[in-house]
Image 1 (cartoon, rainbow, N blue to C red):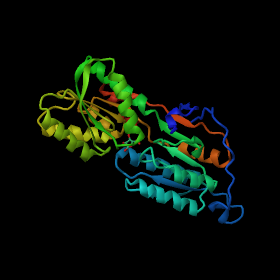
Image 2: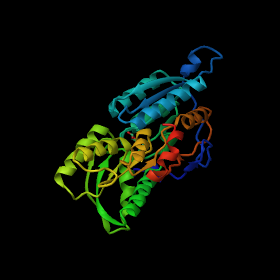
Image 3: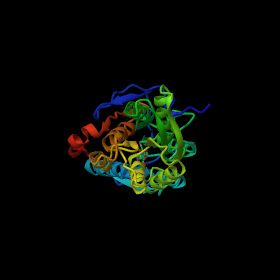
Image 4: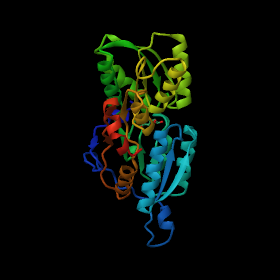
Length: 334
Ligand code: GZL
């Protein structure tokens, strides 16, 4: 029976950067051979960590990459960085290479939920802990990874739905720009949003299509929605800010006012989204914090030491709308 990370027994909430630990004890990761750090000569305890990043499809992704790179620097950890250019097969190749290089730990942002068992089993056989960041995986045995550090995407979808339901007073036609097919955020943000609007029979998702989390694709899909249903769209729900910003461009080019004629709600909370809210073009964004570097390396250091880790460390998110955008924009960190 496939068991996904969503069903994992233990999870903890992170408020700030403290770990609330409640989980299964992990067997200390005994290295079958010397780690890359040991090979740097006796006494050299500089950790060597491989990071397999999906790509650079959105400004959120770039902020996550920067957070992990800068945290490695600040901790004196050698980071072997691999950008998969959006291809899972490149992530699989990167994990194989990290294992061959005998890194001390692997950080993986998995593009999609499935297809990871062989890579994770190979890492475990080599005694190398894998820390999942930002997206989860579906595996039968969740001891194949040390922990998942990510937001609760179902909750994000629900928060977006609840905000929009109030704004539309419980009725309206919604078009949906989905994230990458098969990815945890796309699956769960859709699920949470549908749960959130289920209580309002006047709210309907009339069209739904992937924009791949990318601004240009989001614009193109929104252009098609506008052409196919002129005057029938009350709101757009985008799984991330970049696609929402593309949709805003399409709405404007169609001669309509985004944020007024068509309500726009999205997720991520990137700086451009706050600029769009101050300009009155985006109505609401649900924050999904990408600054995971500190949590990721706390987990690496604990996993390498064989310490207990929660199976899922949930990063808390908040809802921001136009009513607070101008007041908080200067304090935003990404
Ligand atoms: C969420 C992350 C998603 C962001 C998008 O944790 O995986 O991928 O919401 C990004 O902006 O492309």
